[in-house]
Image (cartoon, rainbow, N blue to C red; front, side, top):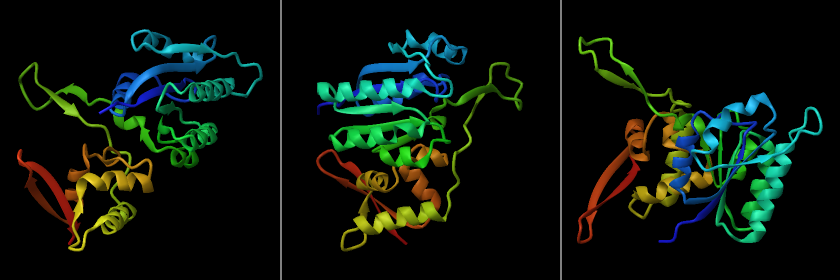
Length: 248
């Protein structure tokens, strides 16, 4: 199966550099990042932290001077580059890394041209930009588990993993979203194939991700809700496991 070629365009002014490695690993799950560029006025002290991670992650810095106080000229440079890349026909999709709503129209335009658009940003990202993407991932959930020494043991080398706090709680809106999606996809007997459910929910809510609620995958999240019957079926010569669910 052919992997999508992706252009990764990063707005250095509006995202932190601390977890760029995890961000690029997440991007690699969706395709091959063939173009990686980052935009900023590199004369500013506020983006100095990025300089140390650019070379090791093969990201090309694009210098954009701020000609006017209070205006983010990096936005314009990123948008112009995105359109040039679009018309070059060298990629199948874009990853726009920013928490800025100024890229909403760009995301819409790229999708109109048939491009896949993945957004990456902080939880504070305005909803219009999130909705304009095919999929939006909050960078807070990409932070690696922190390894800390345990306090309840005499073993000097004992450690424990500390998980990040979930961005959201499981609430009625989430349960209704999953219920409605299961009903939309259900066959005549009420069963829905789990493999189709995640993508279907994503079309309704582009920032949906089980990790936002503290779960690594969709199935553990659904089991935790406790309102669905789970049926695991083995099919095919290799007894491949397919999971189905329906509302109790």
